[in-house]
Length: 138
Picture 1 (cartoon, rainbow, N blue to C red):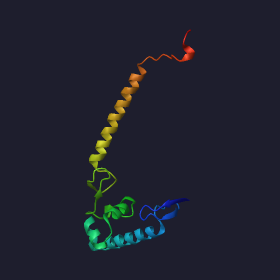
Picture 2: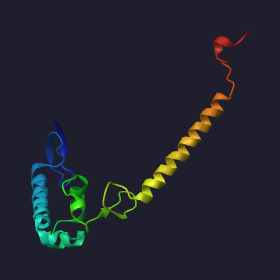
Picture 3: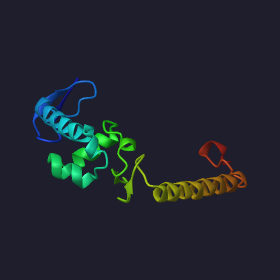
Picture 4: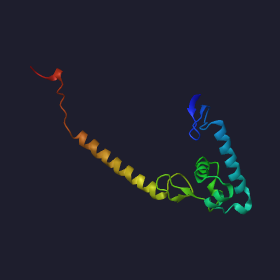
C-alpha cells in the first residue's frame, strides 16, 4: 500500500491494488461510466459517435477514451465509435496506434537494428590491444 496524491483532485489517499484515484474520484468515474454504459446499451444508440455520447451523457471525451483503452467499452460493438491514435491523433478502432504509426515505428526499428548490426561488425573487425598499466614495459 502506498500513500499517493489523487491525480484528479490532489487529495492524499492510500493506494490499494490497481487503484489510481481517491475514493471520491473513483466513484465519480464509476458514475460517468454508468451514464455512458446505459446510453450505449439502448439499441437506438448503437450507431452513436463520440460526439453523440458526449452530448447525451455529459461525460468528457478524455474519460470516454480512458474507458475504451481500459477495455470497459468495446468499440467493436459500436461501428461509428472511434478514438485517437496515441501518437498522431488519427481516429482508430483498435489498439493504441494507427497503421501509419505502427509502420513508421516498425521501419525505425529496422533501421536501428541494421545500424546496430553494422556497429557490431565494425567492432568485430577492429583489433584491440590492452594497454593497461600492468601491460606496459618499463
